[in-house]
Amino acid sequence: MAKKEFKSESKRLLDLMINSIYTNKDIFLRELISNASDALDKVYYESLTNKDIKVKRKDLAIQIVYDKEKRLLSIIDNGCGMTKEELEENLGTIAKSGSLSFKENMTKDEKIDIIGQFGVGFYSAFMVSDKIQVLSKSVLAEDAYLWESEGADGYTIKKAEKEDHGTEITLHIKEDTDDYEYSKYLEEYELKSLVTKYSDYIRFPIKMEVTHHELKDEEKHEYEDHKEVEVLNSMVPIWKKKKSDVSDEEYDNFYMDKFSDYDKPLRVISSSVEGITSYKSLLFIPSHAPYDYYTQEYEKGLALYSNGVLIMEKCADLLPDYFSFIKGVVDSEDLSLNISRELLQESQSLKLIAKNIEGKIRKELENMLKEERETYISFFKTFGVQLKYGVYNNFGQDKDKLKDLVMFYSSRHEKLITLQEYVQEMKEGQEAIYYASGASVDKIQALPQVEQVRDKEYDILYLTDYVDEFCITAIQEYEGKKFVNVSDGNLDLESEEEKEATKKVNEDNEELLKAMCDEIKEVNEVRFSNKLKSHPVCLTTKGDVSIEMQKVFDAMPNDMGIKAQTVLEINEKHPIAEKLKKLYKKDKEEFLTYTKILYSEARIIAGLPIDNPTEISKLICDVISK
Image (tube, rainbow, N blue to C red):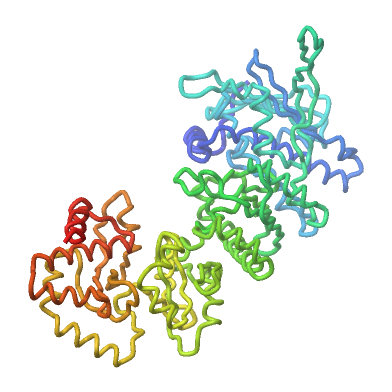
């Protein structure tokens, strides 16, 4: 029999399609099952309007049969089947879609779900087989036909024998190579796994004969195997059910099973959207972070389905980074199965779905904060860092979406509060939102710089996460109130009289302060201050980089060379101020010793390391022993 050539650019197009569109060989089974599901949909639809077609929906099914010895794998359906002309048209032209044309020819009121586009998906089977046979008999014809092909060189079609309508696709599985084990597609476990992963929600039963290993004699520990036909797929996706028909326990069990979590989710977000792009989504907020969440190994994304058939296990484009903790699934009939990752990223439908999902998650978190505060606080303690990261990432372009979701510890309330709550309770005449950074609440509370602000009875936000100050810096201001670091050297809380008095003290001791600054070259300035109460010294900063920010930069693997401009401030009302003035006049060497000690104390208070601890320890002992 003469071999027919494909109507498309044969070998080049087929090779391009196999090697470029499909990089994951496993999906061939998904494609063939989806095509079989389409054929079952079609025959059932036709039976509703054609009395000559007698089928019952309960009898429609897909079968998987494999033969290890002969290296054969068959996918069988009792659907509409194909005539010789349809085999020629659908399989003779690469990327010709019988399902697509069937769907396009239906009226608006007749629309039913058709999963795939028969053609491109079918040819993915050549990734794992060196020969494909398609035996098909149309429900509207008497004769059956066999289509055969070994690849891009062409195909043959001949009359054949087949008792019932439907299609049987048989793959001759390739021999194993050094690079790939094709034999796995003839293993029961692998086939079951692929069906569960990619085709679990096909609407028709997918059946296969499976082996059961059962105990025959308990005393002798004897077992026997027997085979039994089993339905491999669950058929009805939980996200396609009405929310009222699904119990909380069912949602919890689905989440724990699907995403391998040992605990229930904190929140379930179910939605169904109809419009330009229609989709259903079932999202979960975990109650705890995965063990690898804050590592480079963590992979974000939602499982993406097209009419219940898995397209991508983790579609990262559906979630912004700041909501990367969300788990769930999205199912849309507007997305094609036969689409590469690159084309998916450019899909306008996907972008619209992602935008809607982002808004849905944000709204759900806002409602949780408003209506279930303790639940939200539990969530925020786990994933709050990610929200703060989202505020300053990408140059703060998402700050307005997230600024009302972030929380910080309040010195007044001694608990987490929002920025809105801080502003609502600001004292009359207060012009700024004050914050202080440190490793812990206790360490921040002990900072000398905190005293002056607390004496004014102003609330202070205590920032204890490494991202906090970057987050605050990105927001810049909230409801017209700027953020001010209590460790800012330009903190403006003194009266005019106090400012003038401090200015005079610094002018009168200009040479002394310069000598101290020359001795400790790490600081940009040394000055007397009236902002300190009981503490003798502290470190403040100039410019945009604070000491806590510098710590973050210093911890990075690559030295970025970003340093805070530090100022050593000395309490002009503390006895140490007078001691320095006397030593500067009478004992310059002792004066420099005191300078080094005071600077080291200021670094310790700020949580910074001392480069020469042995030297400083000796100097302190020398001073004490005199």
